[in-house]
Length: 317
Image (cartoon, rainbow, N blue to C red; front, side, top):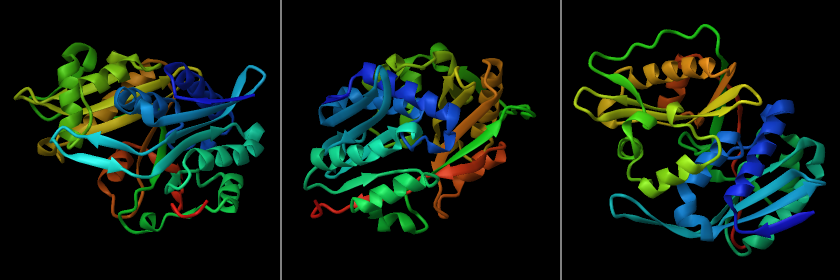
């Protein structure tokens, strides 16, 4: 059974459930943007502004969701500095349970029919040989822009939660949570780290309503002058006893001071206290993107898998 329409919060919870089931059996096959935390983060921060440009299709086996596709179509993004970015192509986030891998051909066909005439991109995992073969059979090839030193593909990193170092903040800095500091501080921390950004109070309210969000696991570091110097959201998957950092960002004026390192170590300890035994975080993987990768390696994370950016040109149907 399948259905196709605008993406809803209830759909995202079903998709998170599939992420948990795939994580339990084949974690290396959880696609980029299809993990428990990524789904909540991307839905929460974007649905207020972009839901009209989102389409989804769900595939069920009996009452169980076994595959889904989330097509993100052209849209206009307004950022906090007044700039505007027009997204002219389509992007697909998707997941197929490994026991139903042959449904991927239906997912691809639906995507092509949903975004005809547009440049289409997708990010299957490098460990999913079957998916890579099927995408290629449908005319998708490696995105040439991703092959250079500054390519936009991401890698997934993981570590267990034994032997976590004691976090050490610079003098005068302190740990906070979004539950304590409030919405304005949480939004400002993100915008300062990632600006120019489309993130706003409305976007944050969407994140707060996403399944799995916990204000006590939304970490902030406050500088001596009151600036929120760094922030990270932790998404706890209690079924698999794992959690994901997404996003992680630091104010430019407070980088290279050990602030983000201390925040991550603090988060790892909080995750362990919450019952997790495992943690993940994604970062850009191309050779030229060294900062985040070095930060995560420095607190014990190691690369486990990565995504493969594929593209079908606009003139290929």
